[in-house]
Length: 152
Image (tube, rainbow, N blue to C red; front, side):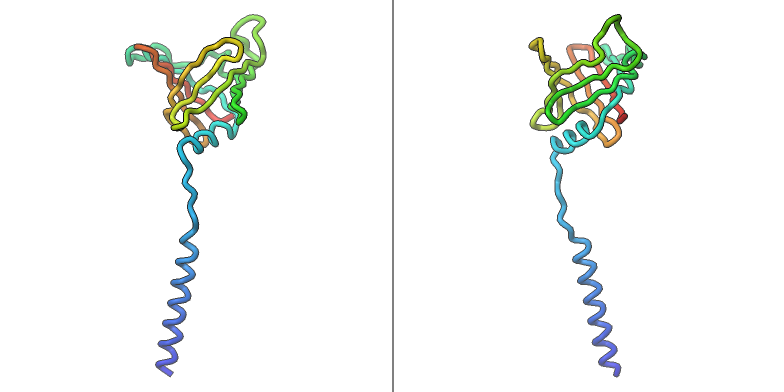
């Protein structure tokens, strides 16, 4: 009887151990920085929460104009960056919708805004990304512009 009890106990321990192993070893998918940032940026519409302007490392502006605060920004998966202007206009008779082309660099650490009608490109570094916000930065000489977007 004692041998049977030991054998059954050992069998139960092996079954439980095997079940734990099979439950903990699930395949993991590794997401590249490009894939992660693309997923986050295109997952939702965004509002610019703040704009910080640094001149030679010194903050010269740390707020967003009210006319920009109510705008909704969409980074579509077909590479269009669309800005739906809110109810507060920055300029008289301005368009209610603006659009640019955008693309992420292959490394996934930067995005580029491209003019549609005018040939220009502005590069921004992706500094912070999460499911609820992301931050981009453009440095030109001594001046740096930082824009923080929050999920709408």
